[in-house]
Image (cartoon, rainbow, N blue to C red; front, side, top):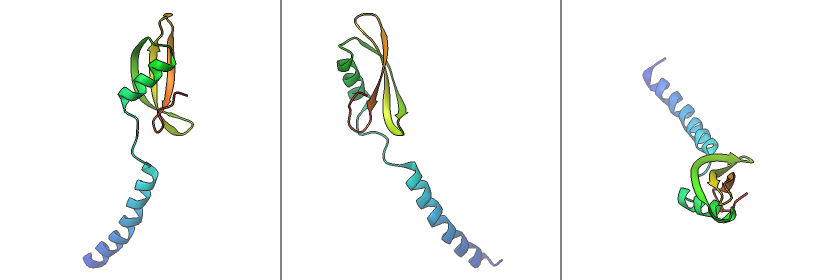
Length: 88
C-alpha cells in the first residue's frame, strides 16, 4: 500500500473513531462542585461532619458520594446528583 493511500484510509477511520469516543465519554463530569455536594449532604443529614466526598454514579448518572457523621454519631452515605445538586 502506498503511503498516500494509507494516510487517507487512516484519516477516514480516525474521524468516526474520535467522534465515537467523544459521544461515549459523555458531558463534563459535574455541574456541582465537590464543596457544593458536601454542603448539600450536610444539610440533608441535619448537620454533622463531612468525612469524605468521592465521584460516583447513581442510576447511570454522575453523582457525588458523601459520607457524613451525623450529630447522633451515625455515619450516613448520601448521593448528591452532580447535575442538580439534589441529595438522593
